[in-house]
Image (cartoon, rainbow, N blue to C red; front, top):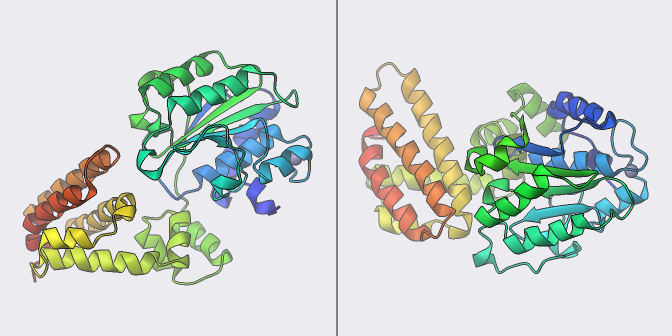
Length: 341
Ligand SMILES: [Zn+2]
């Protein structure tokens, strides 16, 4: 067991102390909402906290040695639950723990149908909670991403949030907390999580090994875990291709329709996130440049709105190809002014 997995990330230390001391005094809210941008370690924090709540020999952190910790590391803990688009599974200490190694309580759905946290998964978890806790202690249900709970799933969970069985902790995680059902959101204690300072992020990235941290961190909009993923894999190369592609469309060297076809649709969500960050960078440099005409800023503002709308539609049933086509057609109009030269 990697000891780092039971500890918060360096920039989460203060929050950790705050929440764990509340837990030790039995004053921790039974429903927490961890809200904040992607790639700052919400999932890591939630798992370390779940392990702490369940640990039989905790001190400042979960011990990593007891029966509970060992089971959570192996994704076999009967009182550690995860609700996600994969259904209801055991919660594994490692956020990237392979789902097929987890104790599955609910049949996972095919890739194409994993757009929400299903009511079946929620019922399965609730059923588990109505039984006596296996070790007579705490029970944890992690819900991620909580904004993908559908209407009936959210309603079913609302009842548990209102009257939680003894010792039950629900931890909701969301990058888009405004998408949560308001009645559910208002009953959770909201914990706003922020990215670390650039200095702290780079220091942490250096400890993880690898290189080109500053570039990856910029590309990831300051989110250290995204930056780590980028600098480790093909991420940076893919982003350079995307930037070249959008630039070529703006300069009318590529037409939007065929450009849209070259984007890997499996990476749609990532592509849209990248696009919003890239546009934001362009907007920032346009604001900083006193010679840039105000029409550039207006155009970039408009594009950012379009990308947000596309992100919303991508979560629904919109065709990825059509979505990207319409985005790049808009970009041709805006970008040819902004990137002319
Ligand atoms: Zn332990």
